[in-house]
Length: 204
Ligand SMILES: C[S@@+](CC[C@H](N)C(=O)[O-])C[C@H]1O[C@@H](n2cnc3c(N)ncnc32)[C@H](O)[C@@H]1O
Image 1 (cartoon, rainbow, N blue to C red):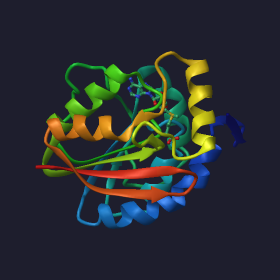
Image 2 (image 1 turned 30 degrees about the vertical axis):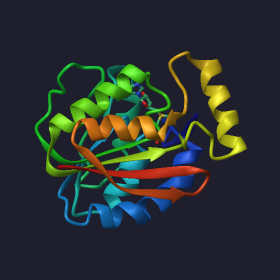
Image 3 (image 1 turned 45 degrees about the horizontal axis):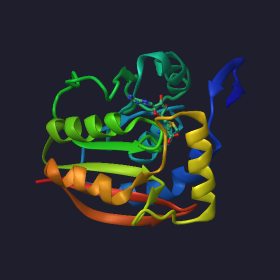
């Protein structure tokens, strides 16, 4: 979806508007001792603008796949937040992410869009790029013990699968075991509104 603003068509997501407040309530504590956050799959940029404004002690680095960078930067350029960096290209399928080590990585609503192989690479590369004690935060819907947590999530999963053979709501247990195998230990699994979760992993 897009939004008309200053005669530019900006990318827009209603779900971002709905979930940014509840996510902020969690990450303001989680990121209280951090200085820098790398965001994977920033999408419309609404989260990046909102979180960088509300958490001015952080420098916020949005990223996206190359084809989405222009659209993402069109929204980011409407922000005056000095701690919000211009988006850089990052496809999680890249064999080695061309970035420095970082203390925190955030991603929202991305694991059910990208392929399983991409999820595996995201977790592997995140584990390589996080410094010790670094944090990986993953927000979105998950299945538990192979069950959806709501009828609406089951419907959402069907719509995802109709759109792409690669997309599907992921099993929490699969994500957790992938992370564990790469030294990322689950510290919290927060229940969030609209049948979503916020998972916090720490690198040991
Ligand atoms: C549903 S959107 C979520 C965007 C935003 N994080 C949000 O919460 O609204 C999923 C995003 O994943 C991105 N994506 C898909 N495949 C990717 C990949 N291989 N590497 C990085 N990002 C990817 C898409 O470009 C898209 O912006």
